[in-house]
Picture 1 (tube, rainbow, N blue to C red):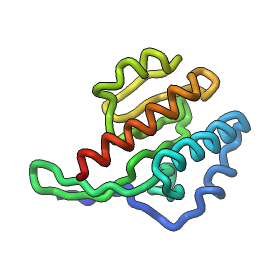
Picture 2 (picture 1 turned 90 degrees about the horizontal axis):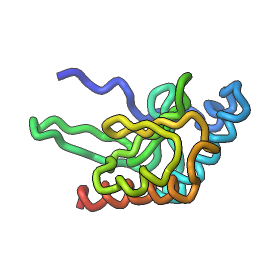
Picture 3 (picture 1 turned 135 degrees about the vertical axis):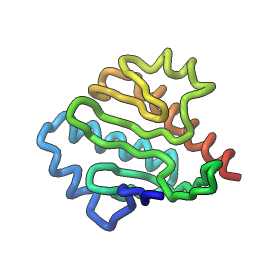
Length: 138
């Protein structure tokens, strides 16, 4: 089986974030750092060259394959700020309805900018995702 290319690195999160040219996007990323730090009680770490992850999560597929990943993370992509919520969105439809302007993928939340969403709802969504992941893990 192919090995995951995205792994935790010792690269500087701050250096990565300071490299974001758009000031608004950079400020949004620093706010996301605080939200995710509070939810996980973990310091940010770089995963690969463009993902900032928080906490650790070891999971096993039904095939027996195992991987280490982060509990929550984000990446400032060209088109969107992508938040990775490993706990998923099932059961959080009410929060998503109240969140504001966003789109979702399987475990991804896509935002254009933080001002498009309700910060309190986003904090709760991230926190609930971490709690759900910890329940699955136990």
